[in-house]
Amino acid sequence: MNAISTYKQDIDSSIEQFCSSLLRQTEADFGPYSLEAMETYCSLLSRGGKRVRGSIVMAAYRMAGGTDMQMATEAARIVEMLNTNLLVFDDIADLSDKRRGGPTVHRMFEQYHRETQLHGDDTHFGVSMAMHVGLAGTYLVAAGLDELDLPCETRQKAVHYLNDAILTTIHGQFNDIANEAVRLVGEKQVCRTLTWKAAYYTFLQPFQFGLMLAGDKNADSQIVRDYAINVGLAYQIADDIIGTFGEEEDSGKSNTDDIKEGKITLLISCALQKASNEQKSELLAALGNRDLTDEEFQNCRKVLRETGALDYAHELAAKHAQQAVKALQDAPSQWNGEDVAYFQKLAEFVVERNK
Image 1 (tube, one colour):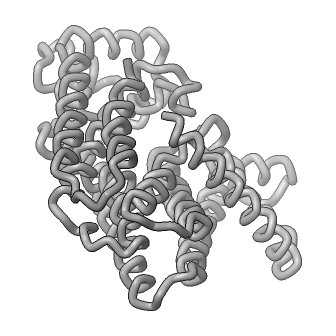
Image 2 (tube, rainbow, N blue to C red):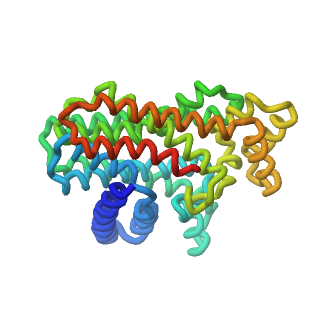
Image 3 (cartoon, rainbow, N blue to C red):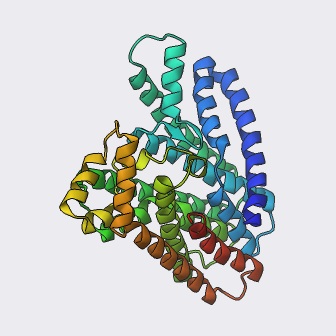
């Protein structure tokens, strides 16, 4: 996806400039402890990832005829910041140690607490500081949005789109956490959770956001929703496959994390529905086991293969990707054909990367 690489470079450059300014101002105004906090935020933000969300903003904006690519880049950076804020909280909820190839924010603060020999519990310190980093990040998103060079009415719509995405994602997180506690969860509930916690803020909101910034009135159309929700589901299902069967350099975290965290992914849900009593007991014993051994993990992967869960997840991801491509066959005639093709290729790419 060469277009993603092009957008990624612009977004990364914008993030670098933003972080440099933020850290200078923070140190001048609030001192070393606040500087340490914002350095952890910038560390996670700068590590990047693919910048898929920001790239979608820029591609949708250009597709709809937008010409101010500097403003679009700033908007893309704001969407990437929103993603980073949510990851801070998500990593706390999941007790995650790594994100994007480095330590999570709460683990960075734990290490800081130990290295500087501060008083009290390092875990509590880490979580407390990380939560407030996430809150600060949320304010920074709102402030950045307010600074975009947009008409007042467009800015109000932009605020609405971001707020809707955040609230929907939070409801997805409610369901994701509850699913881990319930454990025996059906495919319908898993897919609803993936739609709310992933498809909305990863694809629908950035797609709508980019169109809306360009003044396109199709942001709320069924075509946009059908494309974005389907590609979002394909992306998350593929991501969960990579999370368990891929390599750490592909996911940025250990491939044992989802099992150790007790995540009820589509893979797990399907396997539990089809497993024998022995296989089900083995999976349930592994889910949420922070001391999972490599042998136990390999046995879990064996169950996911033998029950057909892995093959089914591949098939369902491909099906959603095909539905996303199909949705864009009826794209509005005023949309740039080259960019429409970009989004169709993006749908194909999100499932190809897990093969």
